Image (cartoon, rainbow, N blue to C red):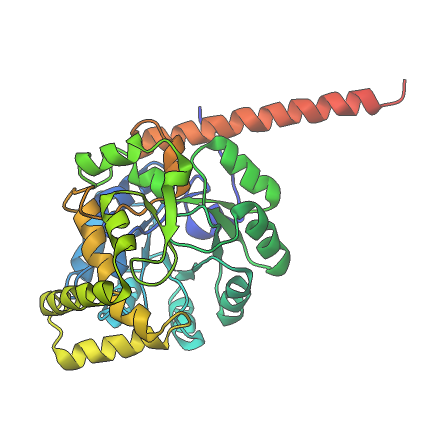
Length: 364
């Protein structure tokens, strides 16, 4: 029997276990999200990468697969951000996740509709700001995490944030098992969030060739942070495409991204004016800038090539360092049951240790 742990996270999100599956772009689809929820965790649908006009159908797809509560993520700078917000409220989605971007009015709009606001942050100051803007729960991702990530490891960042905010905190970055869950709870977190561990499940949509490349990466130092893709630090499995990008000159990368941007704009139905407006939104962000804005199109094109088309050589493979310790694929159900069983074993061992020390210290 899996251990049941009730925390502020399970109470707010309505899940059985304090385990969150993050909204990985093009990976956290309806099937993976529902599988996580049906196993007792809480899954986030990757709303930030759903094409305009398809958000309602994607949410309905999740609801057709599970009767459990789930979440959706979004970015304020995506072309269909308003579509996502309206669909989330209309469907009564339990929670949203986001980075920096939504203002207090947008967050209030969601909260008034009963939607739990749960941003992901990678720095102490961003956690504090998120709570000031109205966040109900904060997910804190340490530098071990995949995709865009900060430089501070989870072991340092998590206690800092726990000391600074008064809302439930979820730990992310480097988690994959029950030991990690117990460690996070011992720090004071209300649960853990995992991306890479759920990517490497049998419920994941990632093609087998790319999954094989992830599983073959056994050295954590080969899951590295690079700024070569869009000018911001991101963690990927080191492969041929990442090495090629890092070897390119900046003008060559900018030219490549301009080609990708034109292609992406046509597919998204954005004309020159729409592309210009989107660029201004990106530049207005805290991390925005001309170079970052111009290079932004590199990321979706190359990540889709890696995790959607299944080309681990010519595409990119976003990953947390924890991929190096994952040896096999499991279903979401088997994964969550195992994590909770391991957590129960660790909690029992700690209780035994505490009891033994109490006996030794008692008067005779």
